Length: 457
Image (cartoon, rainbow, N blue to C red):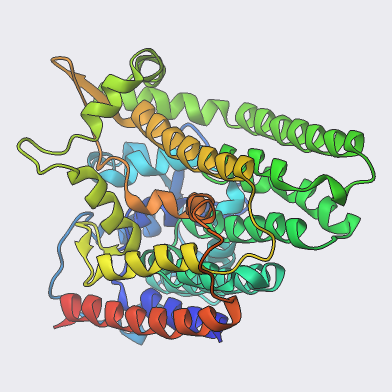
């Protein structure tokens, strides 16, 4: 039932959100379109068919669009489809260059193409049937929902004792929002759910060598999704009893780490030209020196973090923390409009993490490791985003863009929630999961109603 609820709600988000209404969906769609054409490695000067680029530019970025006309069937089918005209450089188009599309499209050239696989398959299907750009967008969204549901089913089957927590995170409006969009977040979240579930399974029952081999093969794909380097330390949670000796355990961890790092190095080399183009564009359009920003963060981490998390002038205490929590549970659209009762859902999520019974308790060392993964990943998020979008004006550090948002925490939030589990008061997942499912489903429907009322009232 959880997977069915996720599918229904995910389809609802995919259909209710207006075309390119999700954050940065213009650039993500453009990159997914490239990959659907077999263009897996990014370029310094990315190109799109002129008809596709023209369609993208018809939907302005960061537009409120309170009175949105519902998409019609004719909008999905009308268009040249597979017969799009010759390609055009996005960087040479003044309108694209002036907006977020040009910047986003360049930055996504260095993204791991696996993150766009479901959406690109959907776009390929739409293109094969001669659909319009909007039609391909919606098919890409629906393919993302399908992929997310498959990953959720796998995670629930692999970690049945954590179904309450997994359900609460998976059916959170922001999770569904991201997994219904054409973006790189869907695969990142999906692989994170499955990866955490595999690791949790190894703690509670014997697993086959095939399971460990799948984790070895899959971890590089996971880590390269939006720079999820924080996933590597989770290998330390696999108990030694899953191996015939501690030497084999150490050899396994070393092998996985070396293979993953090798894949990272190879991919960075393959996309070095695309990254050079992105770095040059950042310096010419925004005056941002990525390497200088990285050095600034490393040299003055506390000063940078203090400034970029301070909020606007005269902001209330903990403004940034409250904003992150709101965005973590649920906002929508370019302007990140709030969904109702976010604090109630967040409180319930913490309660589930705290109360759900774990047959094998986490040791103190494991809790420290999980907290280290969570806060290390959060620090990595601030570092990477400041490197590509940080500013320093008159000694004041800030972001050129919207900065770190709560949705970025979703892939690694399970590490923080798992560390909260306690031993005194516990509820079985069999009891907790149905309660969570019904509550989360109702909240998801409420959120869909709020979004529909905003755009189509």
